Image 1 (cartoon, one colour):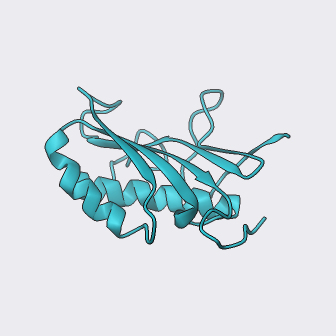
Image 2 (cartoon, rainbow, N blue to C red):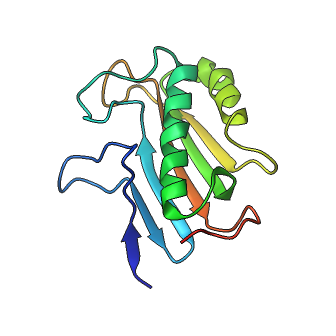
Length: 138
């Protein structure tokens, strides 16, 4: 089974030779930790608080899942990093706008900081194409 790198025009690519945003292996989709950094990684952050940043991040994850041939309900696991655990309700509010039915399993961890001081949320995701009951679009 060969891995396939997924690129979306709506999600900025990382600097060359650093990491992949999204890889597909068989029907499994692996999405790297995503933040609300702009497309150039050194530009403005999308969102001033945890809710706005979570919406920006989940939108990027949605674009990557769709480019991989799936949908948000194919996401089976998320790992969420927060710089302030008290922001969890804001992130959960954003999640309810992107997932339906059986929500992904989730881990939530408070950390001391992210790569830029204005970032307060990072989300990593794993999906299984077709897990939602919808056939993958490959």
